[in-house]
Length: 426
Ligand SMILES: Cc1cc2nc3c(=O)[nH]c(=O)nc-3n(C[C@H](O)[C@H](O)[C@H](O)COP(=O)(O)OP(=O)(O)OC[C@H]3O[C@@H](n4cnc5c(N)ncnc54)[C@H](O)[C@@H]3O)c2cc1C
Figure 1 (cartoon, protein in one colour):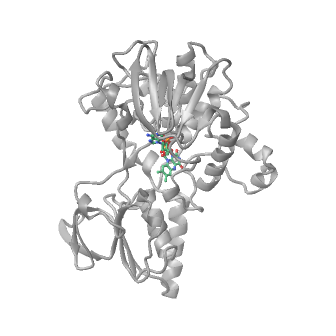
Figure 2 (cartoon, rainbow, N blue to C red):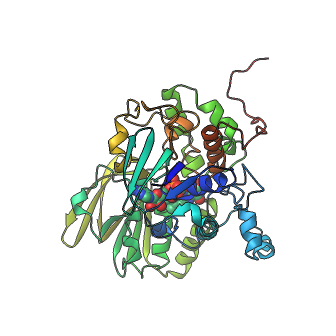
Figure 3 (cartoon, protein in one colour):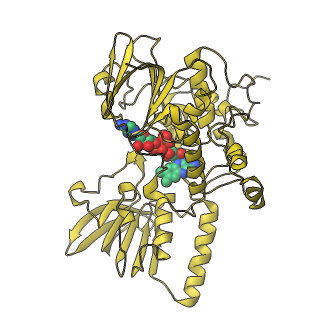
């Protein structure tokens, strides 16, 4: 049986970053396993024109190792794209470009990545993790989990009603939906909801009769990308945030919502212009943007749905009739089923979440020489940068330094942030 120093479970951007930075570390034997047949990035929500919310310098490796062959810059140069890319004058690329870059990295790391491998079970025996996939069992001294988040269905969604006319944005139904002459309601005013609203209005899935966007937020609010806010996405900020008390962390993460979950400003600008021009010509479907509404209920009605809202701007209840309801209600973290054989050994907090140490390893009852790393499981512990790509290379580097007990990366600590959160001493 093959034995590895580290087995990574799931291959999204976060493990691709880890695999890329591990590649340079001599004698570190790694393997990464993915259930999909090839690398794809949220294909259910891949709108080709959608911009990323992060700079192209925040790629898989650059902040830890700008000399890595897996940088975005090397992707551009290796594929003859460099000069033309510069002429586009952009620092922010589209999601499609990011996916293409990741697919190129995947092709460079072929020997370390295995696709079509659905991880079914992880056991711990004789100081080794035994990982069973649909194809094989391998062993590893350490594992890392980055299996992503799953769609979130709020309390007002009766899961028995889910169908091809009432579905979550990431369910795959968008691929085959036909909105022709339909009354469409999109619930959720985050970036996903906004993108679906825009594309529905522009006829991507044929021309609906009306499109309504319902949001709990006070308005369509832009992502806060301002200078001082961006300091939240730095290693020093995570260092300052990590040790403070749980209650305070929760409150801070909530207050920072627009720094990570706001709407892409260029998208808002283009949408506003589109709505204005549409109004001039009177063309296209009717539309309504309904903020400050909490969805209370969705009931089946004839061939469609009745959606009940609480308008908390005027404290009134409202009802909408819809043929199609699309839920853009976000994502939630789940402990993967394959961990069941060892979950009793992993420490959890009062909210049943993993207790995650500073270097992203789980606190557990197993030997300290066998680590379980978890990526994108610690927004509550490490802060709002955790689900973002901004610090993924830094996080990968911290994991590698911890795993190997050597400072392979970040030998030079980044300079302090300008805003100071730690104790001030004159
Ligand atoms: C539409 C969208 C756009 C986003 N845009 C940005 C952005 O612009 N900037 C930013 O910073 N962040 C963005 N994010 C947030 C975040 O960067 C992404 O969600 C990112 O994909 C997280 O990476 P990941 O590797 O943790 O998870 P994922 O990309 O979800 O990858 C997890 C992988 O694990 C695999 N897997 C799951 N279970 C198993 C199993 N049992 N066996 C094998 N494989 C398994 C899945 O198939 C999947 O490929 C975006 C999120 C979404 C949903």
